[in-house]
Amino acid sequence: MKYFGLIWKNVWRKKIRTLLTMLSVVVAFLLFAALSAIGYAFKGGEDAADAERLIVLDKVTIINPLPQSYQNRIASTPGVHSVTFASWFGGFYQDPRNQFAQFPIDPYEYFAMYPEFKMPQEQLDAWAKNRQGAVIGREIAEQFGIEVGDRIPIQATIWTMMDGGRTWEFDIEGIFETEDPRGSSAFLLFQHDFFEEARAFGKGTVGWYIIRVAPDADPVQVANAVDIQFANSPNETETSTEAAFAQSFAKQFGNIAMIVTLILGAVFFTLLLVTGNTMSQSVRERIPELAVLKTLGFTDLSVLGIVLSEAILIMLFGGLIGLGIGWVLVQGAAAAGGAMLPGIYLSPQAIATAIGIMVLSGVVTGIFPALKAMRLSIIDALSRA
Amino acid sequence: MSEVLATLTSVSKVYRKGKEEVEVLHNLDIEIPKGDFIAIMGPSGSGKTTLLNLLGGLDRPTGGTVVVGDAELSSMSNSQLSHWRSTNIGFIFQFYNLLPVLTAQKNVELPLLLTDFGGGERAKRAGIALDIVGLGDRARHYPRELSGGQEQRVAIARAIVSDPALLLCDEPTGDLDRETADEILRLLQILNREHGKTIVMVTHDAQAAEYANRTLHCDKGTLEAREAV
View 1 (cartoon, rainbow over the protein chains, first blue to last red):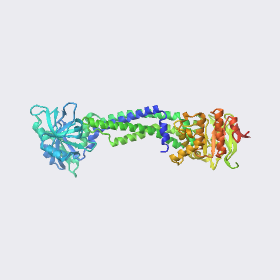
View 2: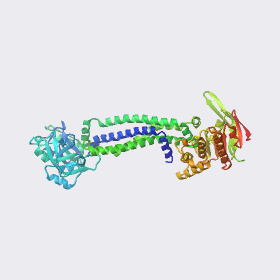
View 3: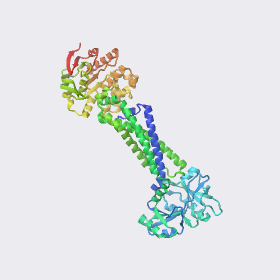
């Protein structure tokens, strides 16, 4: 630490050059933060998935509904603790740009199935009593300024009403939220009974079933048992874990992880060249000074440590600023556009990875100039002074 | 002045230039008494600076031994030599070699970074050293804000801050005008006479050599003693 003043002064020896180098580091880690958070949003459902929940879909396609009569048969399958259902509604709020998911469900069953969603009991009870009631996630409520007691219209893109209308109106009875940062509450839930009664077609069906596996049961065996039950029926099923479901859902958008990795790889490769060049120049310019340090009694290893620390400091300083700006932007995006990209989140794991990359990049860019500084001959170097 | 600080015994130094070997010092024997002020003169390439480098542990002899104080330098590792230099030797160069990014105060504190002193103690000692060279009021100035003579004074303060017994000066006035050079030489004389520093100074300048107690002439790898005028 006592060398910090010397290292800091050396870093800022050429202010413009250091600023430009740091700017490239800032941009790289800003990009890292943003892309990690976006990647997380696509992967978030997978991470937040409960290992003891299974999803039952139509074997052919997610678009095909399943008969509502399956619920009791699934419930009686050995190893099934409880079962509920949901359907895709696919509407928008006021304007087609205001997209967020809506699901008709059974209030008590659904909240029992997803204990990570928190809502006051009195709101749940009030909603259960109001067939036209709905509850919304905190992200949606804050984004659109919706409050409990409001009546909001949702324009259906699939489900017309019995009277041919497409505007479904709901009374907001509650606001739920999730404390799990990996999850998202950017959706609206309303009563399946109301949906069943009001929709013009598709009656007696649901989109998919959600199963909670009994604590002592094997999820794979339960999934097989459910699918065997409906084999050779008009609506064969495919049951998978919630994580597998989330993964296959995310893959509809392409291999986001691969795209993020490729972009970041290119950015960091360029960054290494830029910073490496800066460090090499910096050492070349002050060979006599490094020789003076050695003459005064600084050991070869201390000189190596000083130069290496300069490279790491540039990376850490610029990187943390970039990460900080990225974090602010991600927070802003989560607050402003949570419905568009639910689950956008800069995870502690991503932050730790970024810091690891900063240190590693510092070592990679600094090691060769540092070794050069360490090995320089005092006599030769002083003769250049 | 009878106690010996440094002894060079049968020291030779050979440099290799491609396939050719150049002997810079040849079987050199010299004793440097504690508290002495020696000027070494001689033509370029005569081995003056090489002699200084050997005394300071910056270079190793091809043959013979170099003993300074209790340390036999030829047998020490690079790391041991570094530690030894930090407490036993003060270097003063022709071109001052101050770090431009540090203030005078921080330049003087540099050798103290290698000690266990805390920041306060380092600052205090650097302040004393700057006072000795008459630059206490320039502590916060950067080298670019100082004249050549002042820079050399800061370099001298850096050389004495860790209180080494031996000061090695390589052309300390070579970059200064006559008047400033005399000021620096008088300062070295004070350090020798009042602070008991042993000084070995390489110089081309006969007038500078007059400030020393004695002058040794280096030529073709050997030394010849001449008393100061």
